[in-house]
Image (cartoon, rainbow, N blue to C red):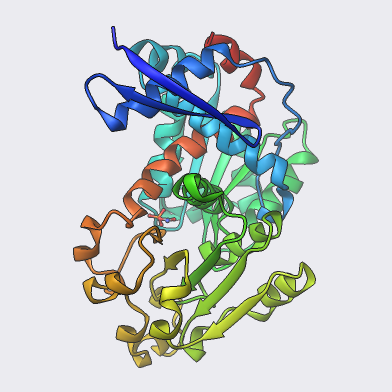
Length: 374
Ligand code: CP
């Protein structure tokens, strides 16, 4: 049995616990003590229901905090073989449809594996050309057909607004299943925003969380749905400042800037990374989304001005955070991966756990989950 010493102090709502394992194994320390805390946690009424997950504007701070806590608790239970087996029966009576007609690696795999972690069986369509859409079936009839076989539809589409449309359409049928937006065109990527918030909160765990931080977003801000969704969530955090670093052709769109202004979130726009890098607590790098080019406009950009490489590491704060939604292009040098401030591989892994929390929430399985933690 692992033995450990515990030092505990209060910070905010949750006790913060410092553990030193006799083995000195720092990585395991956190999860061992979290497991103990999870067993003894007071039963807490869960306030928030999640039916469809379509747009980040539907989330408030309490919901985000609850989702971050649930994500960590699911990860904690999954750290033991016994816990993982228990999780695999949590939603074994449910089935999911992964309708991913726009390319995806990590969102598809993380949702697929989140389903498997919870015991949910999955079906998938990854190209319209292999479905009856190619025979002329309307998207409405296709979605209604999915609802005949599964309990949740997870959608990644090139079209903006299709998940919203699917949710409204299904709500008017006898099988009003939940719909989850796994990325809609250039517009929104709400589950990415949730895992980004989780990664930021964990990265800033020792410095007060996201509140009060200066967050830079760099690259193709006009066509990057991840940064658009993340901007929408910033209204939930106190005294956050945003710095947008983008070429003029790919500046943040006016609708997002208007939203930030309405919520009194200060933002600053620049084309000069070097002028602001040292002021940032986090830099969220994005790739140029050339798949959306109309006239080869990406090729006109001097990408070296909007890239992070080893030469920038000296300018980034010692406790700064480097993130990227991935996949990356030349804007993020793999030589940065070894730096402890590079959080993007962790960010990617966090996606599976956050998506497991989303599915647990959608199926209202939290009470059962917390009962299994005892
Ligand atoms: N971040 C992200 O959405 O990656 P994929 O396109 O690989 O799913």
